[in-house]
Every structure is written in structure tokens, then in C-alpha cells.
Length: 120
Image (cartoon, rainbow, N blue to C red; front, top):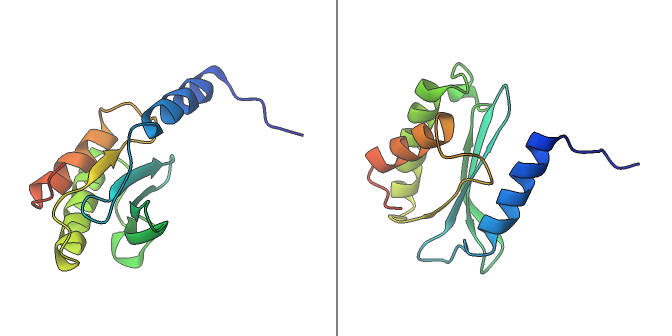
């Protein structure tokens, strides 16, 4: 009935739960969460007080469909997300890496968002 998790997924889920205990998004500093798969990257900026998504971006959108979920694509996606956040007058976020290790694609996404002027 339930899918048995392999060791890698079990460890990521444990990290995710541990991180979410302390990371919380407000209206002033919403939570930016990253989800990645082998084919796509998804990023949401969430106000946890109201339970609303303020902005989102993914490689499934038409203008970003050519981007691959590698470090180069993640950097460009982060810069585009930063521009969207600036348009909505959001200058600071809390970064939720969602249990993924902070290197490679996740780090490139965060660096791209910082390059656009968003503070973490």
C-alpha cells in the first residue's frame, strides 16, 4: 500500500522534517522552497501565515522549457525568480532547501536568486 523508501529518500525526508521545524515564511520574509526532479526544477515562494503561494517558477513554463535541471539552468531560473519577486516588492526570503543537500543545482538556484538582489 505505501511505497517503501530507499535509504537516500529516507535520509532526505528526515532532513526535510528537521529543517521545516525552524524555517517559517511570513509576509515580510516568505519561504522559498525548492523541489527538483531528474527532468524539472520547481520553486515556490510561500507565505506560511496565510498559506498562500506568492510566486512560483518552474522549468515546465514555456519560456523556461529549454532549461535543463543543471547548475546553468538553475542559475538562470533563480535570476528570473528574483526578477519576479522584485516586481512583487519582495526583497528578502527564507530559503527552504527541502531536504536537498546545499550544493550543485540547489546552490546555483540560490546564488542566481541572490544575484538578482534577493536577500536570504
